[in-house]
Image 1 (tube, protein in one colour):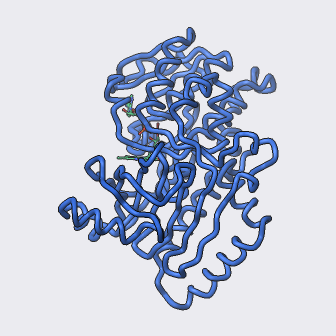
Image 2 (image 1 turned 180 degrees about the horizontal axis):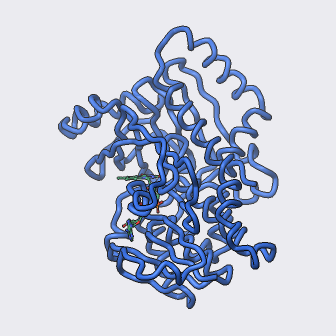
Length: 372
Ligand SMILES: Cc1cc2nc3c(=O)[nH]c(=O)nc-3n(C[C@H](O)[C@H](O)[C@H](O)COP(=O)(O)OP(=O)(O)OC[C@H]3O[C@@H](n4cnc5c(N)ncnc54)[C@H](O)[C@@H]3O)c2cc1C
């Protein structure tokens, strides 16, 4: 198959590798230089669904030394003062041998490794422009040009979207009182907060705040910002110092009404973008890649390529909808401070603390999604 991919972010680049390995000839269009693609200061939580894709395209072994595994994921409800933890044994049996619930990856290392593998793959042609000269040359066109996709605008594909009244603040800190194989998801009424291990005593803090509070916090002098962070960290965890300058970005919910248009297929943030709580963003983008690769590899559709966009949309529908509902519910759950809701919150925490089955169901959805 001849495929054009627009956008070489983490979704488009992995799609190029994956589709080329499945036998397609890929033209990968990108307007940014490799340096611009690599030099983004972002940290991702990688789940086992992503691990499987990276293994299949042959780059897992190149990446593993740069990933930080975590064996414990503590979930804390700050308002109720309740907590439980997900353990490796809550995962599916075949996954437990990896001894980790997931891995933390820094953007630079991830993007660099993927771009290097692309340059070693014969049937990927990188084209440094945003214009596709002749769309008739392609059997399929994959739009992976991000949340502000021009392709989508051109094709008049609409989305349901809104901005959360929140910004996401990220910063790297040195912590004491926490083990390097532990991650935390903390639900407090400011908004959800994640503490992710980066190796040794280094941790990434990703916290969401109302826009007003967030802007105020970003203006604080370093010492006061550190004081603030120490108030939202779990009991017993202490902050030593901050090793970078905090950054903030707005948080948007976006879900396309359609996942394809003619022979164009929308992948990654072109199609969906959700709140970073629960670390689902990149994993969901890469599950799009997995579904499309499975369809393109199937001998059933060699003669009926026109079906692929429809089947792709159907195959992704349930996973994307479920993750959108889970992430949005978590944000609302975290931010509500209406007393009436405290009883159901207490009940949810009690069930998750006491019931192995409930923990397994939730963790496996967050790990594998709902793939068809
Ligand atoms: C500021 C910011 C910080 C973030 N931090 C985190 C984080 O810490 N952790 C996390 O899990 N997620 C984070 N995210 C979300 C995460 O970056 C996305 O989930 C992920 O990048 C999605 O990748 P993508 O390839 O779908 O889109 P993008 O990364 O947006 O890639 C789209 C690519 O398409 C290219 N492009 C656009 N238009 C064209 C065109 N016309 N022609 C050719 N190329 C084009 C762009 O240059 C870009 O390279 C962050 C997002 C933002 C905006």
